[in-house]
Amino acid sequence: MSTVEIIPSGALRHLRIIDLTRVWAGPLGTRTLADFGAEVIKVSDPRMPLSRVGKVNNKLNRNKLNIALRLDKSDGRDVFLDLVSIGDVVIENFRPRVMRNLDITYENLLEVNPNLLMCSMPGFGLTGPYSEYPAFGSTAEAMAGINSMIGYVPNRPLQTGLSYADPVSGLNLVHAILAFVRRRAVTGKGSFIDLALADSPLGTLGEFFVANSATGYEQHPNGNRHSEYAPHGAFRCFGNDQWIAISITNDFQWEQLKDEVNDIRLESPDYDDISGRKVNEEAINRIVEEWTSRKDAGDLMKQLQQKRVPAAKVSNNLDVLNDPHLNRREYFSHFRISEENIEKYDGQAIPGNQKERSKWFPMRDLGEDSNTILVEYLGYSDDKYLSLLEQEVIS
Image (tube, rainbow, N blue to C red):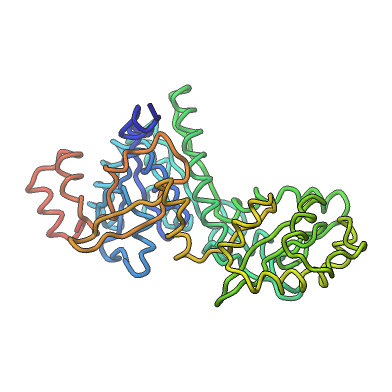
């Protein structure tokens, strides 16, 4: 019997999270916790509808209840405090001054929930000269120095294209929350976590810091090439914008690739060892790409993998959605948006302990669960609920 069957509601089903996060990093982290069964209550500003353009919010806010609440109104703040009193964790990713201005700092929240866990995810942390700067994943990865190492030519660094700091920070949130939940279970005490967006990608760059401090080494943009190995990169295949990634790291792989290419020019003794192939990388790459350009990327990937040559088709989003391996593993999640429309989204990469897929639900509309949360969770009367509605404290 699988773990999912043993824990059908998810391993985190007893954890209630009050989610104030926006954009990507925070919502990704809270969505991951929700996938594993945590009850996530997303607090949205009634004046800012959740955009469905591009489906980004749909992707990041599944499995979350939604209450539309004005935190800048005194009655709205009172509602929020009541909500915190029945929660386990509060997560936000505003600039530091926002929570101070709303008078809902961790110290304030401890008055209504002494065991509360709270995680703040500002761009540059709560202290320091950059603390009040706004940040997005694209600027955070630049500040971390990642862009200085990415590109095809040394004088033109590139962004990653996926705002690398955002997903790394979102996943750091998950393990940070789990670690501090475990600590609270042992000590009975809550905690405050300062998880800066710009700090998260720094944790992935350890070897470059060590290399620089030890020898002065600096990594410069080098395209898809490797510092030691060749051929190593993306090679054009037959068709429009079709590519295959090939990585040759030892002599066995080179011999296998050479047999498949079957080109006399690759028989030069200059190419027999790793160092010789690196010196002659340009010539080798031209020959290999002449061969790959006549091949279908998917078929070539299978051909090379069967020969134990590390290779993979460079997939676009549509390729990934239709990938037979991912679909056979039931990676994707499907949500019925209307009678005739089912939408397909990324699933959850870590199997086991998740909430049962049949209980997953798509992003709620703004304020869709306001009544349920106020009346059923907080015990407000219908009259009080209607009064808050009339005052536009909630929506």
